[in-house]
Amino acid sequence: MNLRILIDRFACRFSAFLSVCCVALLALIAVGLIYKSWPILLEHSLSELLFSTIWSPMKGKFGFLSFIISTFQITIFSLLIAFPICLLSATYLVELAPRSILKIVLPLIDILAGVPSVIYGIWGVLMIVPCIRDHIAPFFGYTTSGYCILTGSLVLAIMVVPVMMHLLIQVLQAVPHELRDSTLSLGATHWQMIKLVVWRKCLPGIMATTILGISKAIGETIAVLMVVGNVVQIPKNLFESGYPLPALIANNYGEMLSIPQYDAALMFAALILLAVILFFNMASAYILKRVTKSIT
Amino acid sequence: MMKHKYFKKLEEQFFFGLMQLATVTILFGLLFILFTILWKGIPNLSWEMISQKPQGGFYMGGGGGILNAICGSLLLGLGSTILGLLLSIPIVIWLNIYAGQYSRNAVMVRTALDMLWGIPSIVFGAFGFIIMLALGIKASLLAGIVTLTLLILPIMVRGMDEVIKTIPKELHESTLSLGATRWEMATRVILRKALPGIVTATLLGFGRAIGDAAAVMFTAGFTDNIPQKLTDPVASLPLSIFFQLGSPFEIVRGRAYAAALVLTIIILVISFLSRLITAKYQKHSR
Image (tube, rainbow over all chains, first blue to last red; front, side):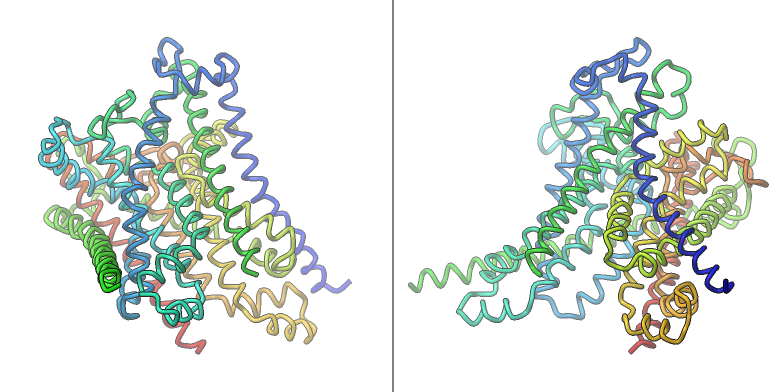
């Protein structure tokens, strides 16, 4: 047989093998984490692990509830801050602003999406922490060190902004121009067009973007770890410290082999993160798939 | 009737004002971050910082610099990018040429890659740690590179994939009709046509690998030396920043700001390079 065809056959097999490895990698990560967290799942029931607040690894008590609640508090508050701002700003850039402004802002957003999270963390420590400690918390009548849920949410919000803005601008730009023109020609104001036609048309895309923003926020480690205080408790208000799951894993990797079952507990924390994020990503993919089907 | 019209106008004015406020807030916030890093970093940056390894008592305010972290980060970034490139190019070729762009298998692999993209780096770090334990390797340059490769592989593949998808089908067909095998078509025509996109995706992966802290925390270790072989532990800029920022000494914290500035400059240079390449490519294709 011809050498050229042999090379082609080999390349086909080899590249197919690598591609299958990508799918296998996803399964392997899940299996690896389950395998490593198996010892702790054998000793404690799943409901005890997920819904107990008692965390004392030395005594063999592993309750993840305070970490889970911290994680969700920070994620939800950061999205509550970032989402309205992103939606309004993306709408302004696509619908109202001159093209030249979009051309300046878009590269800036992309550059900032690439800035490492440790940089955002430093900014949080330098700017947000003192601001919350000295101005915002006293204003509401609380005393805090500044390392609290609100600080974590603010830093996370500004980290999610470039990612969400980029996707939202794409979603809004996909609305056909005919739809805008016909709405305006019926006598609607510009704002009515945005509110009743553009946003409604984009609703699934906006939802998918938000879910992606949530899954990015849940997994963020270093920046949040630096500003959130890392105290094991269920935060009662925004000015108390929290301890989200990624921070738990990152902070304790050093001593995890010295305490029995501690490594299994940390791997279980990673498993929880993986499960939550895969769930959100699948939800987002499902919504987007339904949208593309309904359009074509 | 007149009142209703007035209200409509007022509502519109209000929300347009809000939109402008949101945009200004975002731009101000993002520029404020860069400004803070510059403002805090520049006074602490010196030639000693970027040209020397840490000396005795460095973390208590002793002499030396962060050359270990700069070299470590560059080694980790380069290693994982090269490994990622070697893996991602065959995958992209398979997705677009052998499997057929929209075949069921290709869609499945793309979905898996999108899922991998969403997995946070701390989970990759934990997974890398499991592999290390299973294979009996210590925290090292090799383990760090492998973990980072897994992290940036989805980014690189999907980035290249989006570019190759836009190459017209006629080019595929005319190449094949001249008697080329699919492999020859892929390497000599399609990859060459998509080269700027491939470079951009690679730079994106490099930037991500160099800036990531959570994945290398478990796997790469930390050291004051520049690694000599693959099995040595290696320092990285993000971890160096993170450790120094927690110090009670003012001078050590100052070094963290300077290290942050160095990292930011590296990221900005990568970003501008990829932008330059994209812009040049768009000029030629028109």
